[in-house]
Image 1 (cartoon, rainbow, N blue to C red):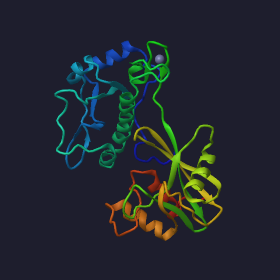
Image 2: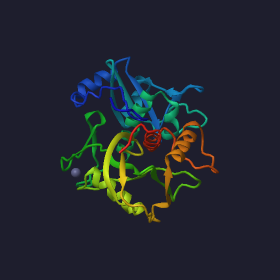
Image 3: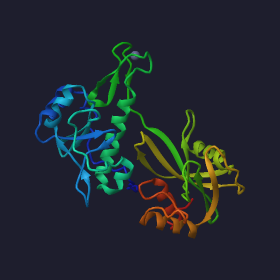
Image 4: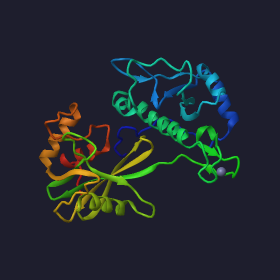
Length: 308
Ligand SMILES: [Zn+2]
């Protein structure tokens, strides 16, 4: 089995062959065991303080909002029990929020891993609906069908499906050193793997080589896939690679990076250890925490668990 990182490992059976059956979905909505996760402004209801969990609620509590047209999506079945999510933005009375509702990225590390994965599915879908009210082909308002998995245009009959945007993210290795960059938009000493959206007509390997060259001027040879992670901001698939740096001299793309550097295995191991245990200390070099696949690419290479 592959390694599972934050937002992966969703335990729900999405029942994709059955969810177009509106009678079946209606029967699930009427079933007292079914559960609803409300999200407001893309932040979910949660319960607990010391240990947080998603606040799954009875569907009945949301029947008025459903009738009034709030966006509803079927997430899947867990041992036969249906799980739904609803966009509760602007719905009154909505749900009781903790003093500070956390965004999904801050919340995910505090949740059980399976709940973080379900939340990724819910957040990406609710966000997609909020941004796709009109047909991309003719501009008419579209309607939700297939339990939230299709938007159909009543005018031109086009069907629109939620998508994942593929991103390649890579650690470039040259001998005993690896290349990390510091983003222009992030202050402090936080370095990370280079990354970028794949473009149409490109393979994953071509995308890796292009991104590294564009951002750092380094030429890349071999490319090895390691692991991937759903990233629901709004709906990316982060595909992680190790790749071979063929050249050494760095020329940073100033639009993207403030700085890029080669780091030794020991340096990266120290950054991984600090990032795994606490918040950034701006005086020290750091990396993203374990919520992000960049952390694991750095961890796996620096600890000798993986190599090119
Ligand atoms: Zn249309």
